[in-house]
Length: 108
Image (cartoon, rainbow, N blue to C red; front, side, top):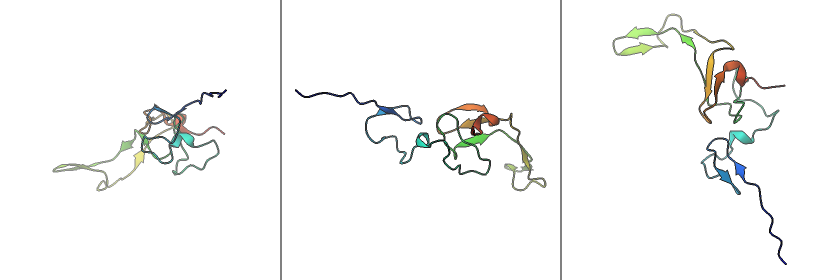
């Protein structure tokens, strides 16, 4: 008699699809597979709390801009600073998680 075992599918945190084999969502190394303690690859040491991505995070910031004839240019501004705080809105473009910047700080 052949015993049939049911395998639990793996759900990709980026596309939400479930797979029994290698994901077909186009990501060779899915950020969701990063484990706690994995090095973070950005200068703020932040990562998405949902999918663990480190390179798809956008932060709402105050930026000085130079007004130009055809628009604005942050690089031409005399004061090229941009400011954000731990409470600034942030979003992960890999999975859509939205929160405050402090939500993206890794737990120790």
